[in-house]
Amino acid sequence: MITAYARREGRLLQIEIEHRADLPTDALWIDLVSPSLEERGWVEEVYEQILPKPDEMAEIEASARFYEDEHGLHLHSYFLHEFPEGYRNLTVAFTVGGGRLFSLRDEDLHTFRIFRARARRQPGLGRDAMSILLDLFDIKVERTADLLEQLYAELDALSNRVLTNEEKDMQKVLSVLSKQEDINGKARMNLMDLQRVLSFLMRSRILDPGLTMQLRDILRDIQSLISHSAFLFEKVNFLMDAALGFINIEQNQIIKIFSIFAVVFLPPTMVASVYGMNFKIIPELQWEYGYPFALMMMFMSAILPYIYFKRRGWL
Image (cartoon, rainbow, N blue to C red; front, side, top):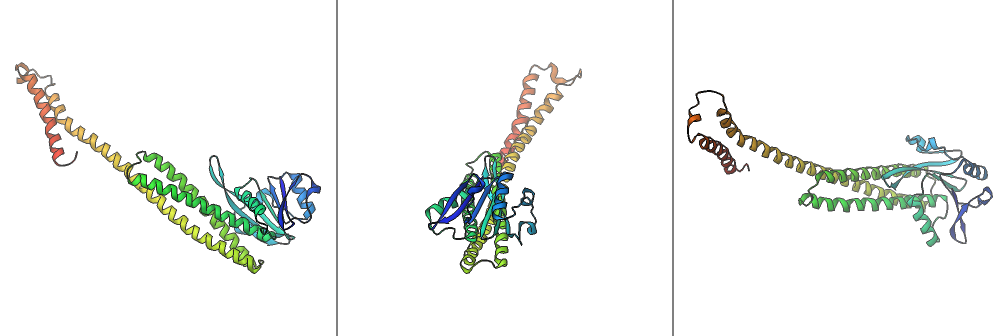
C-alpha cells in the first residue's frame, strides 16, 4: 500500500495511491506499507529514488543503518509495536532525497497513525521532508515515554502486593516480571537506536537551526527516558530477588516441617522396631500390660521432641 502526502492549501494532505498515475509530483512524503514489487517500481520510476531491499532493512551494523550516498540520506530505525503475543521492535527504513521523505515498513504502526491524525488538526505540521521525519521521531519518543510510565505504574502496584504479602502466587509474579523486563529492554533498545540515528543527523549538519533545536530537545528526552529505563531495570531485578527470596523462605518452611516430623516420629519407630523383633525371649511379650506400655513409650518418645522444638521456637 502506498500513501502520499503533499501540502495543499496550507495543510498536509493525505493521498491514497492505487495506480502509478496517482503519484503526485509535489509529494513531500511517500509512505509504503508492505508494498508489492509493482508498487515499489512505481515509486522508483516516478521519483527516480532507489528504495532499500528487505535484506538491507535487516542489517544491524551502524554503517548499514544510517548513511548518506548519491541517492540521499538513508536511516533505519526501530519502532516498538504491540502484537497479540507481545511487543517487538520493527525496522522502518527512511530515505530523504530530492526534497522528499520515503518510508518503508511492514506494519501499520501506531506512531504513523498519530502523525496522520495530528496533521489533519495542525496546519503547520510537516512543512518539509526533514520536519516530517523529526515529528515522527518525536511521536515515537512520546509513545515510548507513555509505555515506560505505564510499566512503572504496573511495577509499583506489583511491588505493593509482593512486599505486603498480598500476592501469594510468586511464580505468577516472576512470570509478570519477566514480561515487564522484556518490554523494558525492547523500549530501551528502541531509544538507544533512535539516539544513534539522531546523533548521525546532528553530525551530518543538514538541518536548519529550527530543526536542530527540535532534534536536541528529542535527544534530551531520550536521555532522560534511558535513565528512567535503567531505574525500571533495577526495580524489576529487586522485585525478582524479593519474589525468589519469598519462594525460598516458603520452601524452607516446608522442608523444616518435614524434617521435624521425621525427628518426631523416629523414636516411636525405634520403639515399634524393638518390639517387632522375632526373638523368643522378650520380657514384655507375656506381660499383661505390655501392649499399652509400648504404646505409651511410643507416644512419650514422640511428644517430648515436639515439646522441645516448641520451646526452642523451631515450630
